[in-house]
Image (cartoon, rainbow, N blue to C red; front, top):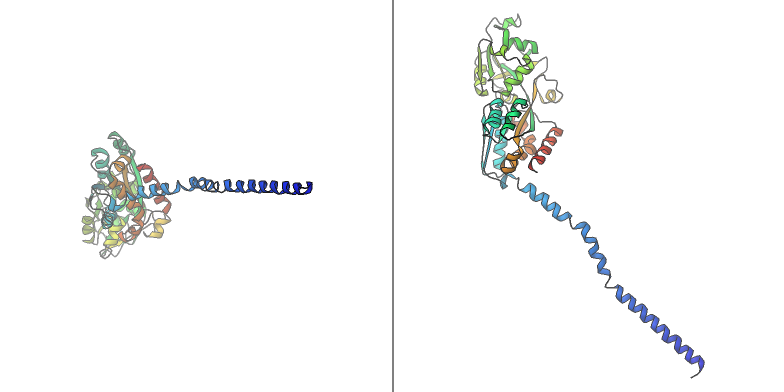
Length: 342
């Protein structure tokens, strides 16, 4: 074999070895491909369990997922709205027993904060510091949930043809120091004023006294011809019975009896959605529910009802006769609910 031929054979052998080596390298890299695929999985894996946890957490607070008793007591003003929400809660699947005892805001706070017999207090005024202290003394910390707005309505009989508008100062005389209508305005009849007002346990009474008498209830309680009742339907019957009668209660009771009663403007402003929203109606006021975190954690049905109330109330409140709370206020209430169940 010549030197030239041996050189060519050497070149071919070496080339084959190089090619074999290259082929071997690609063969070892192919199995390495799947190792990069599992590396991408950890970024997506936590998402699914987290979403499932959130879904499951809210599922346990659906109306058809809870049972047991729910005891609510308090404001007669909140009662029509709460009654509607209890009805809706049942329609959505709750098969337990939910009750609302309409006894007035003050009595409702006493039952919640002193006796500890209710799960929720309904109120047409904010809770007082003294009531908060009573709650704490039995191991409860009241949580406030704003659920709507009321326009406290001053009403007269349909037979009354002389009063359409009053000032705040005239209200103080009508429900306090005046004896006859003519004592307030000379052109009004020289007839005794017949007064029908909520009882002293009512948040409506407290709110009126605070805004008209600067919280001095002695004036209104000393007025002649005054009948007090915690039952707003009793007040309606009394007011509609005479052209010289007058009273006040929540807007829902006026709207329910608008065929029998006339609602008065106060300081030239009539109660309405617009005048409540812009705070131009002098006697607009918030409506509340109060509960406690421990109650809500130990009784999922109570937590579920409050959540349902907060998220569905604006679908019902107009039909009941009250006005929706500002969306930001309801959002804050939902946030307070979420913090309470943690």
